[in-house]
Image 1 (cartoon, rainbow, N blue to C red):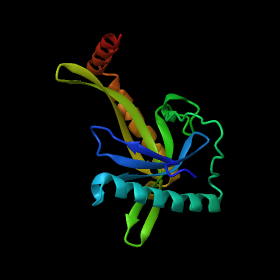
Image 2 (image 1 turned 45 degrees about the vertical axis):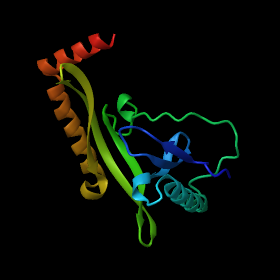
Image 3 (image 1 turned 120 degrees about the horizontal axis):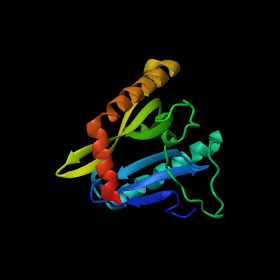
Length: 185
């Protein structure tokens, strides 16, 4: 395996520079972790070292559990991150409400620990005027399945989406949306 397999460098102005280790199967993110340069004494080199260590450890865990099979160097498939909220065929049968399964890793003194999170998410778009420009803002509200239970979290997400769409229909938001669309053309 190449030393940079499953590892991507993230150098953006807004975020602090980091290494992103990710495992993707069937165009879905199975597991990932970010290693920020500013959290390590040696910076970029040390964060890469820990990213490679975690990649090897997580790959072994995923292969042992059968969740992931390493690629053999075949044709690469582009990954598109898109939300189920734009389609009606999602699990909730409500536009803008979808179920999310996320896992992330924290580095503790005893080693790496994987945390799994299951939530129902309501999402919608708002338009706001900021410094004489109309900005499109994607809003989300999540409800934990662990805290509320599967059905209650789903129902709360549906209610949050309905409440948000009620406010999206007011005349101010509609005029801002129309102004945003005209400026984009």
